[in-house]
Amino acid sequence: MTLESIQNLPERRRERRRKIKVQRIFAAEILGELPQNCFLHIYDLSESGMRVHTDLYFPRDQSLPLRLLLDRPIDLSVEAIWQKELIGGMHVAGLKFLDITGESQQEIRAFLDRHSPENKRTSVRLQRILVVEMVVGSTSQKFGVFTLDISTTGMKISHDYPLPEEVDIPFRILLEYDKPPIEVVARVTWQEANTLGQYVIGLHFAPLDAGVTARLEDFIDHQLTGTRSAPRRMATMADFEEIS
Image (cartoon, rainbow, N blue to C red; front, side, top):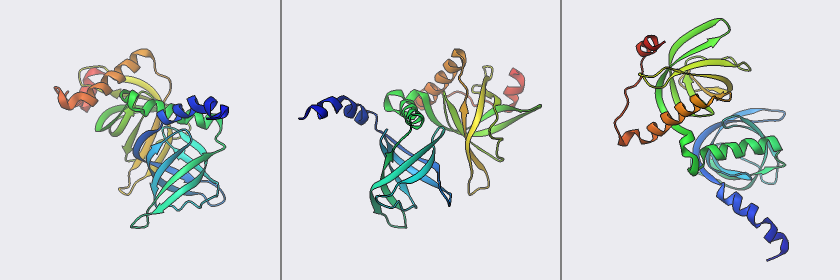
């Protein structure tokens, strides 16, 4: 073993530890002269690359600029180091990140931290309706929103209409019927129309105070274990009006 390999050993071990299985679909955009929106089914992710299933073909030995919409948009250059065509026109590919910027690397590390097996409590697939109050400008609106997942840094929702981008949106979210709503400020990081005519929207929370973070972590813990314990009644619009 060479001196260089010994010096790099801790970093390589660190990278192997930080490779996680994701197995989720994310929106992406191929950048360049002819931008193209697409979806990537990411199977695993590390700080140096990812394995994806997609209907795209990634040319070998060619750098491709890509904007990946994880919890927040990340601009990357990727290169296919291997690729295999599947039945039905799909491809599975191993993509390597090239010349990644410090900002993009930090975002990937933060995503790995939030979604690593050692830190599952920070994010949970929810797939239920939460009652929220949203304030845009001088207008306030209460409605039920179908929440796909939620964490202490944001949530992904399905909604009938797109939400305004590049603005901070105050939300009050009723997590439990017998407790006051939590208050967060969120910003749309990405949104895509789906085949049902609705919009799948990624929202990123501004830094939360300790009390709100504790409420969210307790809620997520219960959702992760709720099937094995007494379920909590789902909050309704009437609960929101009564508590407010």
